[in-house]
Structures are given as C-alpha cells and as structure tokens.
Image (cartoon, rainbow, N blue to C red; front, side, top):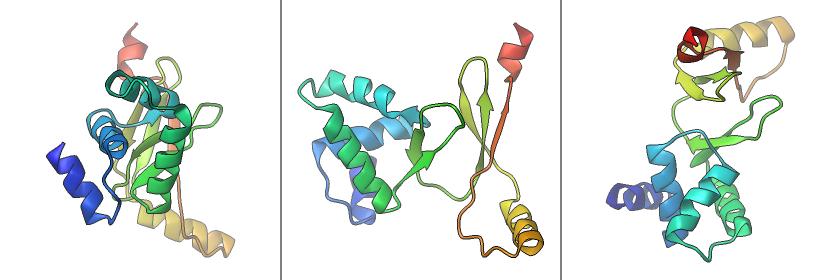
Length: 135
C-alpha cells in the first residue's frame, strides 16, 4: 500500500482508502474491467458502491493516472498509465497483454499519409494466445 500511496501523491491525487485499493488492484492485475475491479475491492470494502468505483476511476483518468483500454466488442479495461504501448487481446480466454512496439514510427506514418495531427493512439491486436492455441 505504501507504494500505491506514494504513486497517488506523486500525481497530486488525494489519497483515500478506495483509491488505494484501486491502485493496489491495478498494480497487481492490470487490464481489469470495472466489474472485476469492483468485485475485488468489495472484498475489502463491502459497503463500496459501483458508482464510487466509477467516480474514482474517472477522476484518476482525468488526471492521466489511469488509462482506459478499449477493446472492440468488449468491456473497457483499465491500467495504470505507462509509457505509450500497444495491447494483445486473446479472443478465446479474454486475456489482455501489453506489447512494446515502436509506436512513434507508426504514428508518424499515419500522420504523414493522412494529414492528421495525431495526439493520441491506441493499437490492439486481436487473436489467439499461445496457451489457447495449444488447447
């Protein structure tokens, strides 16, 4: 919890027990849906509401501390904000993983070809993970 508290303070976010729980959960298990996060936090805080979890997630997203991972035809997942990176999504088991790619090259190419001034990018590869492919 100490590192979670430090992370929140470093980002100028008020430290509350609920926010500490959210950060702790996302630190240990990245790419969680709101429902998964809520169910997990509810074990420590039985009286917490889903609305409180949403409110805190939204506040931390506004402060660029938490990032939403939008996967087509799936519920959004959330992770602590990191350096820009892409994601892999398994269509069978639903696992979401980070993958480090040279996004600057892709972004530059997209901007040059389209004329857009790109200020945000999200790249998700969808397929079957090695574990599911074996089964």
